[in-house]
Amino acid sequence: MGKKILVVYATAGIGHKKAAMAVKEAYNEMKLPGTEVTLIDALDYTNDFFRWSYLQAYLLMVNKLPTFWGLLYYLTDIPVIDLFVSTIRRVNNWANSKKLVNYILDTKPDVIISTHFFASEVIADLKQKNLMLSRLVTIVTDYRLHAWWVCEGTDAYIVASDDTRRDLEARKVDPAKIKVMGIPIEPIFSKPLDRPKIFKETGLRDDLFTILIIGGGFGMGPIEGIVKVIAQIPRELQTVVVCGHNEELARRIQSLKDEYKLNMKVLGFIDNVYEYMDISDILISKSGGITVSESLAKEIPLVVISPILGQETGNSAFLVRNNAAVKVKRLYDLKAALEGLIADPVKLDKMKEDIKKIEKPYAAYDVARFVYEYDK
Image (cartoon, rainbow, N blue to C red; front, side, top):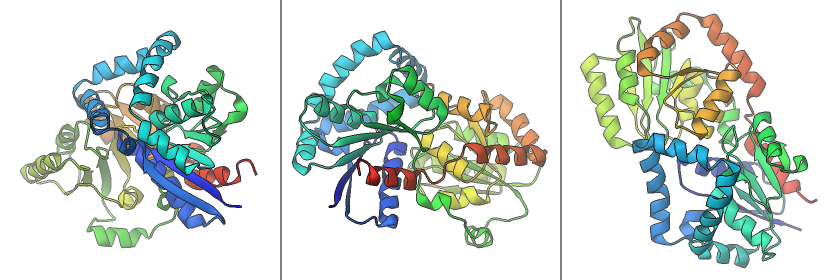
C-alpha cells in the first residue's frame, strides 16, 4: 500500500522553502516504492493580502527594524506571553488558511512534513479538533528552539542538534517524539565534487585564498561594508559575492569591485552555491539555519556578522561553541578576524575537524526514510 506524503513550507525567508525542497528531492532520488510526494507553499493557500503581508512584514522587521524583531522574538518565547499571543495568532492563522485546510482535508495525506511553524500550527489545530488523521512531522529549521515551533498535535519533531532536543524537552515535549537528524539541505551538498573542474568553469584560481560572501536569498546584511573591509587586506585574495535576488545590491557591489580594483566575482541568485562553498576557504554570512547546515556539510568555516536577532543569534552561538565559526560583532573588527584566519591555516584545519563532529549532510535522506517508514 502506498503512502501519500505532503511536504509544506511557507515563503517567509528562503530557508523554509529550501528545506522542504531538499526533502522532496531526496524522495525523487530514493524512489521509495509506493510514495506519492507533493510539495506546496502554505501561503499559496491563503488570501492574497495575508500571503503578501506575511513575507513583507518579516522582511521589513529583519531589514529595517531588527531590534524590534529581536524584542518580539524573545518576548514571544516567554511562556506566559506566548500563551496570550499564540491564541491571537491561531485565530488569525485559522481565519486566513481556509483554502489550506480544505486542501488537506480533500487530499488526505498520510503524513505531512512541515518546515514552517505557520503550517504546523494550522495542521496541529486540525488534529486537535479531530478533523484529520494525518501524521504531522515538523522540521525545526534553526539550531535552537522558539515557542512558535511547539504545537500540541505534532507527532514528531526533526531537529538539528542535541541543543534543540533539550529545548523541546524543557517545554515538556515527549522525548520519543524528538529525532535529531539535522536540517535538510539539497542532497548535492553531501556529494563529492570535482574541484579542478569547478575552478576551471568559474574562472577562479586554485592558488589564492578564497572568501565567499553570501547575503541569503534576499541579499541581506552589511555586504557593502564587508567588501570595503576586504579591500583593506594587504594580501592577494579572490572573493565571490552572492547577492541573491537583490539586484540593486549586485550593482553596488560591482561598482565597489571596479572602484577598489578587486579580484572579485559578483553573482545574483545562483543554484550552484555548493560549488563555490566547495572551493572556498571561508564563508562570510549571516547564520540562517539553512546556510549554516550547508556550510557544515561542506566543512567550510564560517565568519558570522550581523546575525538577525533571535533565531540567527541562537544559530551563531551554537556554531561558535562548537568551533565551527567566528562571530564578529562589528564591521570594525572584521579585518583583524579575517587576517587572523588567513594567516593561521592550522586554526582553519582545526575548525574543519570540529565541523565534522556536528555536520549532518544526509539529513534530507534521513528525514525522507524516517517518514516513509513511520507507522510501518
